[in-house]
Image 1: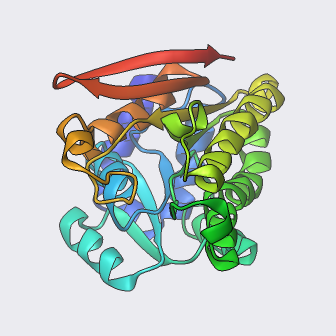
Image 2 (image 1 turned 180 degrees about the vertical axis):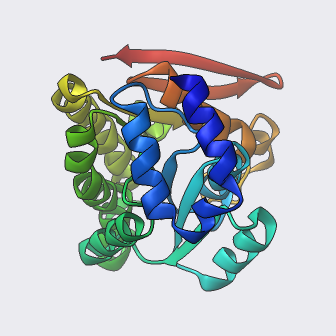
Length: 274
């Protein structure tokens, strides 16, 4: 069966897939039947795909032969991504902090490809200060983007995945979801929340064959506000290293994994399996 699917995908990859991706997706889905999800030939939604980890995930998935729906707020970032990745990327300008936008992203993916196999909830913003100094707008932005955006994106595709008997949802959390520090209360709360959300949703969807995981990286050298000094950046993960851990969850099954770097070596700890 795997050989049949691979052969079909090769035939259509550069021809019919581009002309009628929805139809080809339905045929591939029928051939595959229920079973484990793989990155190759999958339809992957990546939020926060304009920069950093999300961009690296989008490029890596496209490089493995996936059809990627890349979501970002900034058109210039999406233009740069599609120029680098080529035709394997469907760029969608959207802000996942608005639940109506999450529904629109899912609708576009279903209209274009008829299915969604993998969702990577990566979009995030961070503002760091004492709680009393944080403007309400910044608090709302972190909660709405980091947590609510992930919840509503998952809600938009989970039922579809469950009915098909396959799919993978990967939430990008943080080591701050385990060990919070002063001045990071709201940001850390959103990451704690993602871990709890992942844990419950993984148990909820496991009987249907859908896996739910969280990757919790330490410092990542992406210019994000979490990397505030040279000492942190010296042992920071690269965006590509983090992307590899994210996509690795597709094959490894539902889990919460903490990923850090020490003396130049990537270290991963599986905190929980479901």
